[in-house]
Length: 225
Image (cartoon, rainbow, N blue to C red; front, side, top):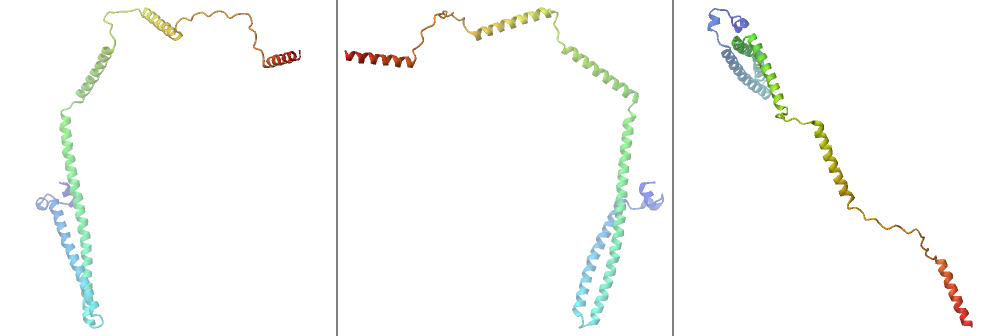
């Protein structure tokens, strides 16, 4: 029994075989909704017209005004019935659409399950494990090869590391000595020794003034003779 058969109670008789498809039923419900919506618009206009007529007659023609109000009440009752019918039809259509969606989902899920089963039929878990082990072994081998290739190879030439270090230190010392010579410049010429005898000091200003005074005194004494 199909999903719709279970949902709507359809058996294996003529009703189940010759019944409408979900898409047909949904379309008919939509058509019915559209028809009732137009009926609603018609009744709303009639109610408005009868209300206008009742206001127009008013106290001038009470009988006509009452008849208009009665028709208005009948239209309002029909409008309320249509509102309830539309709600029922809308609920039924939504339930049918959901059922149709669920049916399509289940159908696609079943199709996918069959495809997955067919794909797995060609697989053996033991073979998968062996394949994964082979891949791991090959990966490990590739890493070992890469490590071996990356190691430096001397091609038969072997050198004494201590001898090479001593030569390197000698070269560094030569370079250091060369830099020191360039910084100190040419060899300086030796200067003569400083004399040990003290030189006479320069007369002070006061001594010069005293000498000038003595000279003036001697000149004045000469004028007296």
